[in-house]
Image (tube, each protein chain N blue to C red):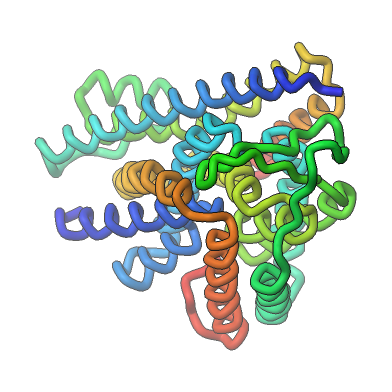
Length: 114
Length: 278
C-alpha cells in the first residue's frame, strides 16, 4: 500500500513544476508581447530551433522572445511527466513507471510520425 | 495584428480559461469556434493557438488544484496511456470513417452522460471502506471544508472507456476533457470536483504531442498563441477561485449543461453545418 505521505510528496513536486512552468513561460511571453507593442511591425519570424531563437533574441527580435515563452510552456507538461516518472522510480511503483513510459513513448511516436 | 483584434483574442481566451479551468475541459471547444467564427481567423491558426491554450489552462489550473490536494495524480497517470493511445488510433481511423455518423454517435453518448449527471446523485463512501489502495480516494472539499471519501471503481472499465474516449476525440478533434470528466464521474465514481481537477491535470499532456508536432511544422502563429496563452492563464487563475465557492452538485449540473451544449454543436456538425470544430 502506498503511504499517504507519498501522495503529499508527489503533490508537492508536481505543484512546483507546474507553478514555475506557468510563471516562467508567462513572464517571457508577456515580455515578448510588450517588446512587440513598443516596436510594432517589421519583425521577421525566426527559425524555431533553439539556436534560431537564441540568435533572434540576441538581435532583439520580440517574436523570438515570444517563441521562447511558447517553448517553455510546451516543455512544462513534459517536465511534469518526467518528474512523476522519477518519483515513481524512487518509490518503486512499477505500474506507474510503466504508465509514464507508455505516455512518453506515445508522445515520441506522435512527434516522429508528425 | 491590430490592437482591437488582440483585445478580442484576449477576452475570448480569458473566458475560455475560466470555463476550461472550472470544468477541466481546456477550453478548445470555446477558443476554436470563437476565433474562427467570431473573429474570422483561419482555422489552422486557431487550432495551434487552442492547443497552446489547453496547455496553459492545464498548467495554471492543475497547479492550483494539485496545491489543494484535489487532483488524483495516480489515477490521472493510469488513465493517460489509454487516452493518448486511443486518440492516436482515432486520428488514424478518422480517415476511414464517416465524420457525420461519428459526430451523431458522439452527441448521443454526451446526452446520455448529461442525463445521468442530472438525474443520479453522486455516491460517496464512509472512511473505513476500501478502494484501490495505491490510488488516493479522498480530498478536502474547499467549498464545505469537509473531507470527502470516494471509491475509484471499475478501473478496467474506466481504462476501456478512456481508450474509446481518446478514440472519439482523436477522430473528431474534440478536446479530451469533455470526455475524460464523464468517464471518471459517470463510470468510475469519482466526485465531480476530483474528476474536473484530475482532467485539468491530464489534458496538458494530451495536448502536448499535438502542440509539438504543430510547432515543429511551423504551424503555430507565435503572437496569436501567446495572446491566447496569457489570456487563458489569467482565466485559469480566476476559474479555480470560482469553483472553490461552488458546491459539488451545482458544479456537476453546470457540467451537464456544457455537455448538452457541445452535443448540440456535434449534432449541427452531423447535419453538415460548419461549427469550427475539428
